[in-house]
Amino acid sequence: MMPLLLATSNPHKIEEIAAVLEPLGIEVVGLDSLDVIPPEPVEDGNTFEANARLKAIGYARSTGQLCLADDSGLVVDALGGAPGIHSARYAGLGETRDERDRANNEKLMRELKDISEDQRSARFVCAMCLADEEGNVLAETRGEFPGLITNRPSGTNGFGYDPLLYLPDVDRTSAELSPADKNARSHRGHAARQMAEKLKEMSHKS
Image: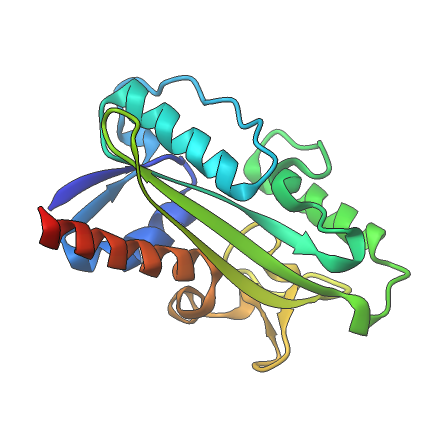
């Protein structure tokens, strides 16, 4: 299998993307597979795409490996697009990923406590960027996952804001979907499937 470095140590992201790319003969490995993890590139872009590009190029150059990076987050219309690119550290609290997730979800619910249900439209967004060993951008994709923000978290699958994104057509939150069902409709799943198509095109040309 062809190894592909995914610029994350988040096991949930690795699992979701590997589920799409491994059938193509691509072995997806995270940063924790490296003997020495390079310093994290500064994500000072003002869009998901810009930050995905910064991560892909930075890690590809520092490791000399083909690198795929994503930048993702939650966009809430009633909050003017917040938390957006600041989704991971929206509340600015918590040492562990679970603590940050809990603090972020609590802050989001506070921000929306006076907003009616029909005004709680939101979507997860995922931008992906693939860079070669020298840091040249080979492909970029974007996926979205729309829903509504609930009043209270529900479900134990997934991570981040998954327990708060309600999907009216199935009467469940993202965190109540099975991994397979979530991957079939999620922002990361959409972006990864588009990336898989681009990888196939590249392999045919080479």
